Length: 123
Figure 1 (cartoon, rainbow, N blue to C red):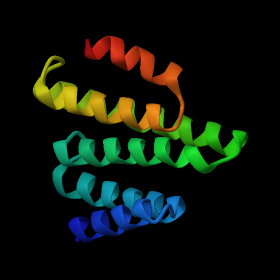
Figure 2: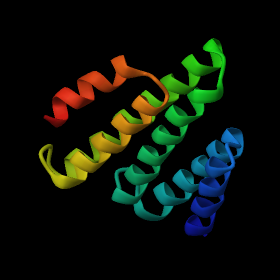
Figure 3: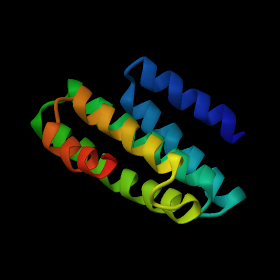
Figure 4: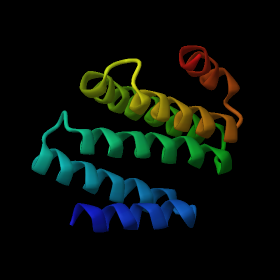
């Protein structure tokens, strides 16, 4: 069921239907937390995906909505990264991949100052 909801979220994101993608990612997170646990790798990956979707959605939004999307992105990313670091270690390839994905999302939406600390950490 969670995989099907993930697919719906991916479709929503590809079609730039951000509200649909967000709703499905929240459903997926709820299912994964219930099945695998709140601190599971599965939940962390959904949080990281949610962060990237929120960051990407800011490309097409006005200032107020853009700020809210970025706030959600930062919150989801911090939660997901915390779990990944706990499970794999702060210098792991998994953490590197998460940082790279979030950096790319920030750069794509022109949020260079948000990407900078992540780039420094990645280095």
